[in-house]
Length: 165
Image (cartoon, rainbow, N blue to C red; front, side, top):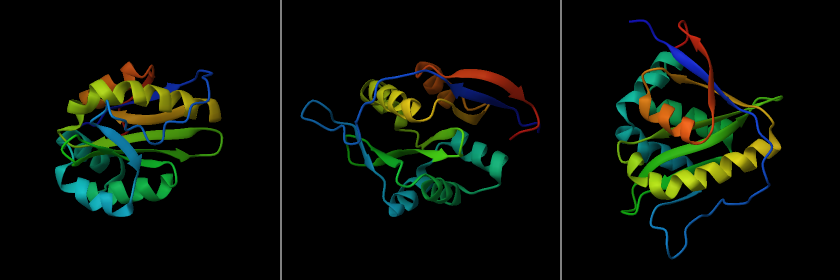
């Protein structure tokens, strides 16, 4: 099987915003600073597309991918909490020097949070883009849910890399 990925980037000057804790009386879904143990809770529920992507790109199991992402992103690592209390996603930002790499891994329930989390995500991306003028990462070409999320946040797919998983 040939693995194809699309690189994505976000280059835009945005306003500085602070939305680390987003829950209020009108929101049921929210995000909070992640805890290392959140990795163990989310791993068995990771979406098949996300699990395939992390295995193809880095050879990691869902648990190892979440732990690695958590460690490379702290303190910029957060957990998305569904209205029922389940952890349905984790996201963060790995500082790579001249640019930063945003990432998101989630369960099949993650899309249920999009009405609340998409606007919050857009504000978070603007804030991070203020700190890092270039946000760059890869997404597996078959990871359609992640690609739709990225497009909605304003990311551009700049290169198809057929050799990258």
